[in-house]
Every structure is written in structure tokens, then in C-alpha cells.
Picture (cartoon, rainbow over the protein chains, first blue to last red):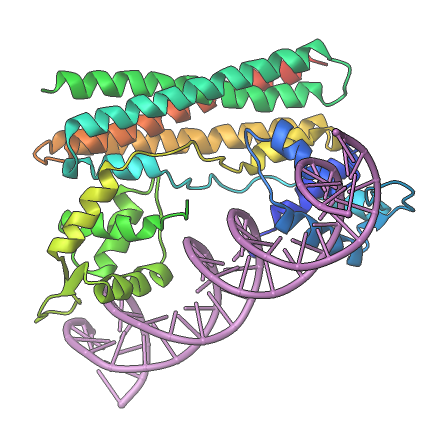
Length: 178
Length: 178
DNA sequence: GGCCGCATGTAACGGGTTACATGATTAC
DNA sequence: GTAATCATGTAACCCGTTACATGCGGCC
């Protein structure tokens, strides 16, 4: 099965949500989808061009500053097809911290403890960000999408909490072990 | 900061743990590090070649069938340097399921529920695998590395459990919401 | 002798990041 | 008018996957 290019669908989906220009899409991803997605301008603009060539989107007559696009009928169908398609398997997510930990015999215990502590600090920062976004969404519960947005956030929050617990338990194990 | 290539260090680390041939490294990663790492032969052999050119590893005189390598002094130093180096930041891990969920307004509720159920099924499978490996390591606790291996596994177990909880909660939210 | 599995290797390709280039508008 | 920021775009490069190629040993 040839891998599908997810970037296409991120862009189609954002277009369907009212993000009309490349610049705006990048900004929305960086602020609202940043807990599970990211993108660079080097992907955005070429992908928009390709989607237009495939007839999935069209450029709107643009009076203003930004180049505006809109979904075509085909584009909307393609988005709906992809959204409905089941996810096949769990990806293996490479994890630098765990790779280092797996080989931690080659480092001092202090250094390893520090690494986990630093990891915990980053996780707490992230958790606070998530909770702030959560509060923000809940204060504007108008949108049709709000339920789904909150679900994706909850995913991040639960995962982050579990990893914080792991940090605590690991520190205890390593400190206790000597 | 120019990104470092982790594959190099995975290979150096495995060499330090007694995996001497490319074939064996790939096999070890697929069986023992597969909860947080993966690799392909298309990376292994070119990377070995490059590491040898850089003087971090040397080919041993090989009587047998497999090409054997060993860490040089420089190679060991480079591994130790990398292991001790702190991890800078939390990576954004792209997540197809969440991307689909974020745009789930464009799919039927049944399809979305199914996707989450299927995800839960895969997570349970994975959890069982983790627990089996955990038991296996605990039954041979001889190794110096066992503590660290168990920590990396615990990471996977806690994360997987948290995501299973998320699946349950999400299913409830979506079913209840209508 | 022919087939199968092991082991090593390479080439083509695709996705993604980074750095750079360019115009247009706004700010002072 | 020139500096900064917005907005679009492109090219070079790196990493990783996939598919293919090759030689070797054992097996029946």
C-alpha cells in the first residue's frame, strides 16, 4: 500500500474550516493543531499548487493581500473520503529520550536523572499550554467542531499526564536503585 | 542547531551492547527496541559504511558468514558524548488519528466511533506485547541494562494505558452527545 | 542442479526542513 | 526612503522507505 500524503488532507480540512490562504493555514496549524501536527511553508505552497492542478481546490478572485483558495466539489469529496477511511495501524514513533535511556549504561546516573527531570519540566509546560487551550475552547463552545477539538486536546492531556507519572516513577526507581 | 542523525547512535549503541553485524542490529531493533525505534536495511548498511569511514567503527577479521564490526576508541567516546547530551525539546509527533478526528465533522458519527474502537483494539494488542516483553526481561534480570530496558518499556505501558482510557472516555462522550 | 533463506548492498523516490529570494505594504 | 513585516514561492539537502540486485551456503 503506497503511503498517502497526509499534508494534502490537513490542507483540505483547513480549507473546509474556513482557512483560505496558505499563510493562514500555517498559522492555524502552529496555534491550534500544534499538539499533534506541524507544517512548513516549504510544504504549504507547493501542496496548494498541486491540489489546484488536481482540481481539488480553486483560486478565488483575490482583491486583498492574500491568495485565497476554496474547495471544489471533488476536493470536498476527497476530504470526506479520507476522513472516513479507517486508520490501519499504530505508527512506531521514534523517541530520542528512550533511545538514550536504553543506552544509559554509558552515561553517569546523575546525567540520566537530569535528563528525566528536564523532560518532566518540558511536559509540565506542555500540560499547562494544553489546559489553557482547553479553557479557551470551552469559553467559545459555539463551533460545530468544538467537541472534536476537545477530544484531540484530551488525548494530549492524558498522554502528557501519564508521561509525567512515568518521569516520577523512573526517578524514584533510579534514585532508589543505588 | 543542525539536527543530529539518531540512526548513527542507535548503531553505535547496539555495537556497544554486543550486536556486531548489520543484520543482527536490524533484528535486535525489530524485536527489542521496536516500541520506540525502527530501522531499515537501506539505512543500516550505508550508515555502517559511513561510520567506518569516520573511524568510529572498524571491520573485524571475519571468518564466519556475517560482516562483524567493533567500536573504536573514538566510536565509544562519540557514543558516550551523545548519551550524556541533554534532549533539547519535545518533538511534535504527527498523529493521523487526531488529524482525522479534528476534521471528523465531515464524517458520520458511526465511522468516527468505529475508528476509535479500532484504535483501542490496536492499543490493547500492543499493551499485551509490552507486558509479555516485560515479563521476559524480568525473568532474565542478569544484564546491566535490564533496569533501563524496563524503564523504556514502562514508558510504553503507561502511555498505552492512558490512551486506552482516552478511547473509552471519547467513545462515551461521542455516544452520550446524541 | 535448482531452490530457498541468509546477508549485504544500492538506486530511486518521496516527504519534510532549511535557507534563500522576491514583492508588497506598513511604520517611522 | 528605508527598514520591518507580511505573504508567497523555490531549491538544496537530508532522512528514511521501497524495491531491486547480488552472492553465498545448505538442502533435497
